[in-house]
Length: 468
Image (cartoon, helix red, strand yellow):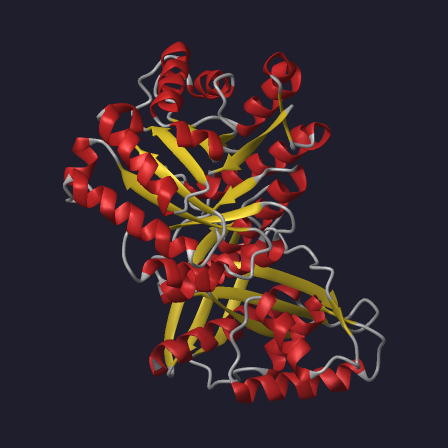
């Protein structure tokens, strides 16, 4: 029985209002990995600093799935992407090239022979870096059959181990698509020696059916999405292959017993991303990473890097000194405690924004509102906002004052003293330009503590932006 690889393209999808945050992408990758999805596809590199960090972070979080990242048809792109991807346990480089006359001319501005040569050269460059290389023949169903066959042969000769043909138009019915795949195998016998995949657009609501029809013709990899917009559905394909895969000798590695629960969580993540607006997101889950007094500075900085921090050499020493003082008093230091240490010790800067006054209105029958007054270089600035709870309202009000929105990576709250008048400590982590900045606040009022922590992190971002 053939194991059909399901390749998730959720993070590559483009739709109005759909934009996953850095933290959401990592959580989504972990969910898909645990579910048994064979391949997790990521976006390519547009901003080297931000996107490289994203790829490295996801690669570190995934244990079993292949991590696939596209490269551009340029000389520099393969090495640039590989530098970010090489630490993945199962890396794959993807080369995408149009094979229809329309897309070659208008998207890539290349003639057929130049396009084929460029594809082969890029695949060869990728193969020199990574054993697993995929070629995606974009708009393959509208390509000239002879040119498509020649391009696929050239891709295989150059070192491609997976060939994916894309029905970009989504105009084929299942029987037509199955025939297209069958004829492709006949025209290119070399396909028998590589992994063959398909990507089907859902224009006619036939993507799932077309994908299953192609499996009967020998295809071994299907592109789909856990939260689909215009492509096949991983949940549907997994259920179909589980129920009827034996009729054509096919199965998947998906954990069917976990499918429903995992898809529910994926939907929560993706639907929340389409309804963004609240500043306060769900708290970051514990990474399960613990440090002890026996860990050296390199080990501590490695965990800090995994948490998203990019610390200077001076800040590294300050953080490690503070860590040693804490570690000497307890057996283990968690990643969340390291967040608090970094917030206190690293990048201490002169405050650009200072809290002057705040008024919060909240209750179980009214929306929470916040009226915040800040001082910026002795100039008063005010903002009023409604939010999902008093802390969210306060954060949104600060955003309205500063005119800047930064991704809230984490919000932590814990008691540092006991009793009814206990002091509360908050740690806020903001992400800007792919880098994490954390701030800490302490007060008997948790809203005040949250505001102070937010401003501490915000001031660090503003300081670095002004110094750049």
